[in-house]
Image 1 (cartoon, rainbow, N blue to C red):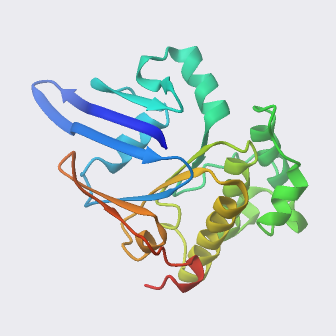
Image 2 (image 1 turned 135 degrees about the vertical axis):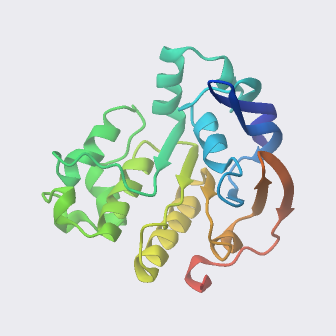
Image 3 (image 1 turned 180 degrees about the vertical axis):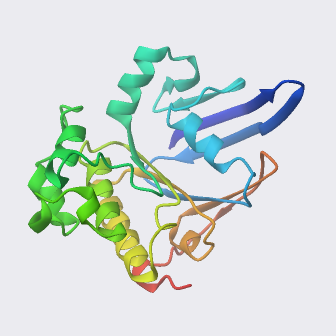
Length: 233
């Protein structure tokens, strides 16, 4: 079942007379409840695609439809509602609010949705319940990313977008975050899209989308995704 539809998507950045075509006619269909890995070299358009699907950036042309709603046609208020209700974000550098505690960071996200789960339940899921009163700067990178994951999924969004979710972590913490993402997928069934430079991580996806120079090079199905526990690099 198509959940995300991307059709002829183009994004052009201009600086004076210089034109950069970050996306060049991208078309893509993502099924509901599957894990996707988007791979490609730096400058291939991965993050631009991520930002447009997430309602963070605007396309120059083309369209994105998520769960029957055309994201590319939304105004500012509609995009705000879309991000609140439909999307959970997990970024490489956590993006936690340093003046809020662990509990308050997750609480801030929970307050945006009427479908949000219990805060302590999600902190327990990511192994951070005992540090609920700590501030982000008192935590390791792996701990911060686990809090960020709880924040992303507390709203129970149908779409989770991950931009290099393990890029700033050591091996052990990266594996732990991947196992948590796998658990979230197993327990709640969202569509998960992961941007990654790490091709080993792509082995746990149902589909691997390769980008190059702003275009889709290939979409390969993976009939036997590797469990996160067995992913090595």
